[in-house]
Figure 1 (tube, rainbow, N blue to C red):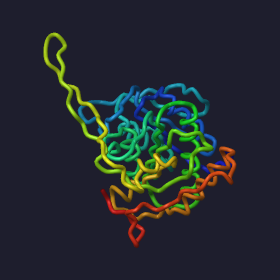
Figure 2: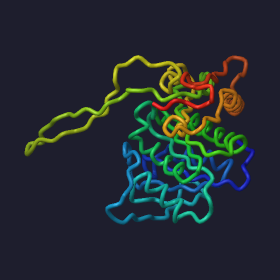
Figure 3: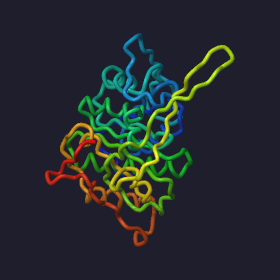
Length: 291
């Protein structure tokens, strides 16, 4: 990518575990522009939300990563544990960004409230560090490369243009780079999923299994789900949606990031339109109403 940022440290984490391919595609891409440290759970921790370990000790192992020059910690804990330990104890220098992902599957709508990917990023935001959670619809190479590329470009743009602390949730569509139609600032879709209970019997006793189900509802306009359905990358400003902080990102800023995405993925610029509309719930004061 080039244009390496001066003395910028990025903490990379996830909820799919230290050996998940999405983690290392992301770390490799971010290493092109910044110094990268990895701290992630030693096993899959999907749907753990913001859970932290308070009932016992947490052990950490420093391991050899699959890419060079990246200090890497495998944490016997949750995604949130990994970020807290890294910021508070494991990394001696200040962290400039926390990036969580690339998650295997989208984190849209109500899913953000149980997502370990989003929960890990939130721990950075709580400590005054800009944080980004990134998800892809699946782990094929194109999806991972698209997600890593847009995350790196967003971090670069945040570093250059926004000095305030932000918390962003990024989802990429199931598209080839040349088919992606834009970067859209989007609200969270509402009432999208619910947990139901499945009952079973193992030969000795009854058991229950929680199942995450998608609700059959019409997709509202200007949401993360509608952005993906329209072939756009969705960027949800969670610091605004969840915590009522001022929205400083704009459609024009998204257009700038998209133009760089087009350039870096070598797309023909005259064949795609830039999608940079503001969320429908944007207020005149440039804030978004929480959901």
